[in-house]
Image (cartoon, rainbow, N blue to C red; front, side, top):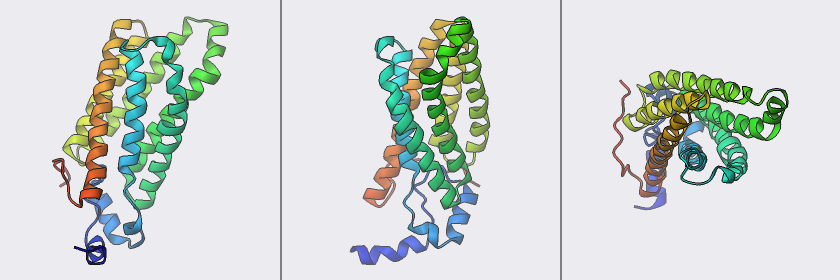
Length: 225
């Protein structure tokens, strides 16, 4: 089938390969001609989230030395942060509220991670080094609470995406309690983070492959009703 023969199909249905869309997002895309010309930003956001999470989780799990953590900073700023926020903005353009909130928020998470460790953690150390545990722990706890909210919302997206947010929530809470005083939980959280990254990469592959193959190749049942 030629490219010209395939083109009309894009005007008949929304992008069903986007795992972050619920039924309302698909309806909005169907209602707008302009959004049908926008490529799915989901795989980009998922890829940015996965790679940055993988690198930091390798440090948290102890699989690579703590001294290598600065390698995460540049990736957190540019890929996990800026690129993921951009993916979120494009999701807003497509009318996909869930994808927009998720990518913009976790992009901001990585930007705040970079800012905290490169600009502000020194100020805490200067006053009371022990307060770093409290600051880091409750920062992670807050993101865990936000992720629980996203878990609830994800119950009308897809099976794989909902599973991703569930394991991410567990990761945040493990890391939070680890930062508050249990290094063992930080290490366990690192392994959960690696699993989260691999899961997100799977979803990234699903979205990219659906675009290049012209059909879904990784089963991902919709939970939208």
